[in-house]
Amino acid sequence: MRTRITELLGIRYPIFQAAMSWASSSAPLVIAVSNAGGLGVLAAGPLRPEAFRAALDEISRGTQKPFGVNVPLNNPRAGELLEIAHAARIPVMVASQGGSREHLARFRAVGTKWLHVVASLEHARKAEAAGVDALVVDGAEAGGHPPPAQVSTLVLVRRVARSVKLPIVASGGVADGAGIAALLALGADAVQLGTRFIATPEANVHDNYKKAILAATVEDTTLVGPRALPVRLLKNALSSKFHELEPAPAKALYEEASLKKAALEGDVEWGKVEAGQSAGLVEDIVPAAQLFQRLVQEFEEARARLAAL
Image (cartoon, rainbow, N blue to C red; front, side, top):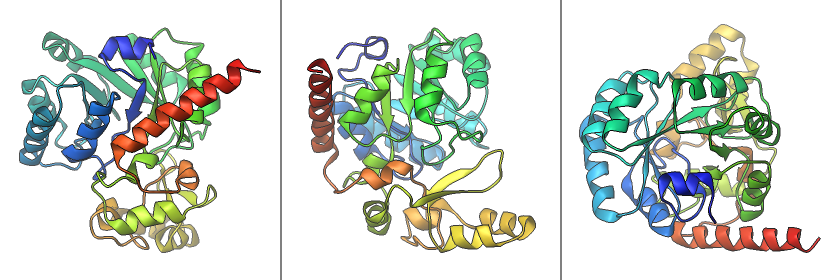
């Protein structure tokens, strides 16, 4: 499976595990995916500097394969996190929520490949102009922060692929190998899965969170928060209350609630259970390495089916 992304990053398969706060903010999931031949991505956003250093050390001991680190550039600790990542000479940076231009030269000097997460054609063109190595394109189905304009992955990835020359990692709405095949057919060079990897033993979230993913249907997510930066999460008491309130009380409720409450404490009613629409396609909890092998097999089956048409 050779694509521009596999050649750029030195990975065997064009499959990414998405950076998910708490779920992939520790080493085990990242190690498992990278060792399987994909790109595991550490979500550095929630981590304090000492915990970030410890996670990087554990990953470097657990795999010799490429891995990625996500740093939200609007994070109050972004500067310190970037310094730690630079000193560690991480193989791949998957940056989000900010501009990359000022950071590229020093990371390139230590051999880091820089990918940037975008959710619109405008931001894709800006990232390309800034000089990043590749794009991660998030569609509306994705968990966490999907595009405010709510353009589907199917449409947005195709639009970006027709408009920029950079390699593209497509993200949003995928939980199996057939979805991977579909997005590669659209012109993506790799595909990123997030919600599917939450349902693994290695994901660092409470069992209640994983069970909520398994119980969800494709209709069980909703958007809450400000229109400019909405969050997709599973419907629960929090989301229902949010939609009942007038704007000012709803804003206060949103700011009071947290992902940590759901991910680490297991409160899946009043915590932010961030998940994509692909939760409705997740039916079991399996080790990440086993899941990865399944994804590759499903992709090959999808490719064979298309070749036979």
